[in-house]
Image 1 (cartoon, helix red, strand yellow):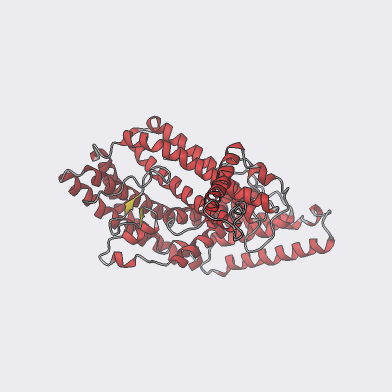
Image 2 (tube, rainbow, N blue to C red; image 1 turned 90 degrees about the vertical axis):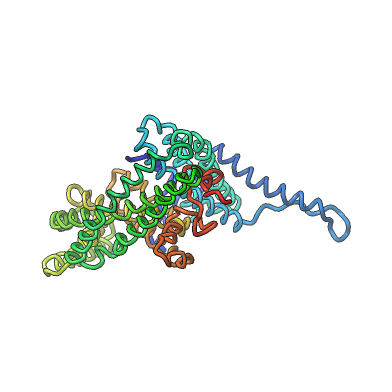
Length: 488
């Protein structure tokens, strides 16, 4: 099932982020950041600032100046506080959306698309709000707007958009609960989860063998990002096994609320196991496709380079020479790797061909256009899978770049695909850094191979009341924790 995540927004609303690692972003009109703050967000922004000032006013009423006069007027919150709130809001809302989409897949599998249409619509609308908030964040990170007051307004606008997205999800949560009725009759949902579990468990050895074959066929860089994914899929399935057993035990003892809670945890883990296995299988297909496409793309780039000088008449002669020399060196290097007879990384070579041809002002039709799309699609899907399965540790910066990469991937121009590829790869790097920086504070929970630490890292469980934890469900921040296992 594919659910529209609502992240596509107008190109004017989402400026192109600059290339990774410090390359300056293209100049943009500094007034457009405030234009993104629609009336609804303006209300949210005003509420944010007014609420802070009101608290300051109430506090001020309890004290006086040393001279006994009135307290000073309230001051706006510092930008650092607003920025922290905006970052937390972006991460929290993105987590809620990802969890909501996962549970919606289970609901549709049982009840059909028509029955879940109202909840799919809520997810889509919430996704649109989050996309607008991430667009504001993207511009903010590029220094737009530059006026301090406008930057504060942009931060408040991000929080306001996220609050509206959260409201939409919270409002729909009760209806989805009534549709699924996990508290009253979890049997059918449990059968679906067990069937999907068995399917993935049976598929795991084949995926592991496929990964081993890729490792022997291609250079190590081709598979480095999925090296441990099969093991992580197994870890999620171990966790799902334990929770499915708890579902049955709770049901046998008549504790329907606990059964529903454990079932949601099992569903979340099974969904993430599928993401891990799908990522390996998808990469295998992409590497084969890239290897088949590479000779044609390289030949096409060399042919385009041959006539490039005549198409660069409006470029200074020195720069034309620099571009041509760079393209010649890069294309010759790629052809040398292809003819050397050693294992190589097809996606990396294809990416190098596309980037070598890009400064030559060619249209990149045919094989080059297909190559740009393939590399962008591969990088974006890999980044999205990593964020989904490690969302308990990934921060706002990686999610912001990923959202822009997904937007550009949907655009028709090869130049956008080239940029999407760069952004997605940087998003993946930032997300991996976040995970490394967090470490594994719950490793001791897995002494008995329970998979609990992985479930926390993946955002399946909140790290509260561990080792049971709090399984997350469809909804915003007010409702997503409603499946907490009852305590005596």
